[in-house]
Length: 86
Image 1: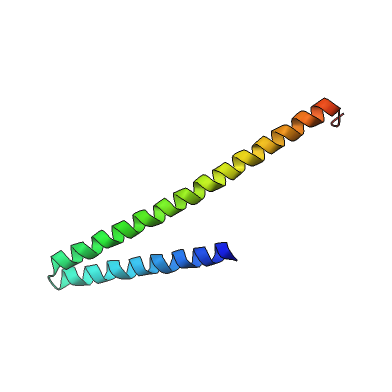
Image 2: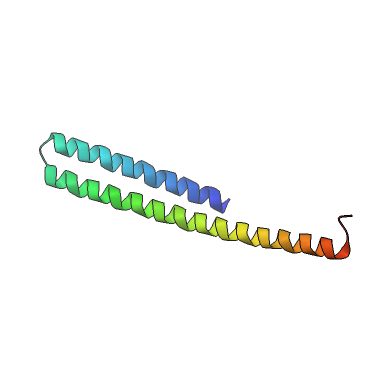
């Protein structure tokens, strides 16, 4: 449930970034280039934050997979030692 809430929060954040990008395009059209660039900078920063969060999640997943592989290797080793696979 916690992961679902996190993903929904990420989706809401992405929607906010899209809205900010749309607003920046409207500002450009109205001739407010400086404000538009500020909004674009905010969007870029938000995207970078999302990427960092995803990378940290990915690192955690990779660490968990490494741990699982270590456990599987230990099981194989014990099976070989006891002859359980024969």
